[in-house]
Image 1 (cartoon, helix red, strand yellow):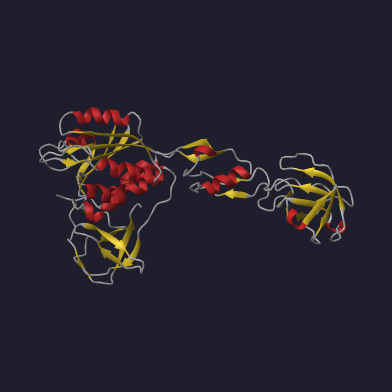
Image 2: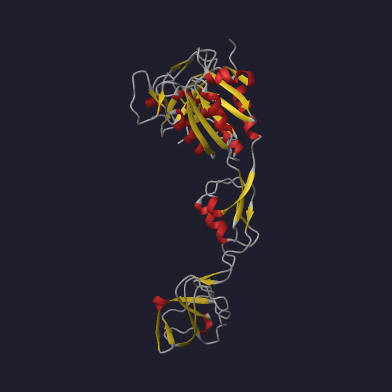
Length: 392
């Protein structure tokens, strides 16, 4: 049987997902970890006015003589919108963040002053501009605050708010439904009978999708009987994408393949683990069907689904890098192997665990996938190989 190239299958998924890109405008309180569609410019300067960096006294520097009293003409607090101009030869008590009055050009910290009977003696001769935060010193009106395609962090949101932006246009998060299949599956924590296994694929896929910007709107499971169609119908109601696991191989009971094979492509692709795959459209929604083994699910997502999902949400792709092998590796010709690996601090990658798609525990110790070309049967220690960073 001819195996579909890995790159062809990934390209088909990525192309379909890229057509799902949409945008929406949200308030800053809902914008954390969202992706900006375009540059945001400052609608106001920051600071918006000259203000004091300290609690102290605003003065005209030329009026100050050390330890010579100046009359305190006024008191200015943060939030005062129209401070009285400073008369010549006087001082104004001022609080941190308060506007510096016209006529003042310096601030002396309160720690360097003695105030008594309506006058203040200053213990230092201030320089012009001392402890004054000048208007637009941080950001000028119209200047770039955050560039488009940025994933918004609390720091970005603070800068946007401080420069007058209340809402932002972001890429819409793709809505993903996750469906696991298999009569042998039971929820984690439930009693486990002989012949049953704990269901982990929905946890794997839901957390991976969320890590790459998606909103998981449905997570369900079905046995190997006729309930898969009903579960899938429920999944597509509120999803842009459906990811299924299990039921895609060549067995007698393969509910996903049996229902969807006429609507799209099912078959083996030239990779290990994760050979059996499917990609269809059900009621207008793309459905990516992955194998049932948990490691195959993880590998399939990282290699085939991840960058397409990121594209749908406006995120940049995560591409492989390269690293030298710590030890020799053998492979099977005709299939691209994806071995679990650990990229060490010295930049060398070592294989973690065996090649089996059922070895979940050892996969937990990996931080990369090592890609072995389909034409390779033996790679020597030190040979450079592509490494795909695993989702942290």
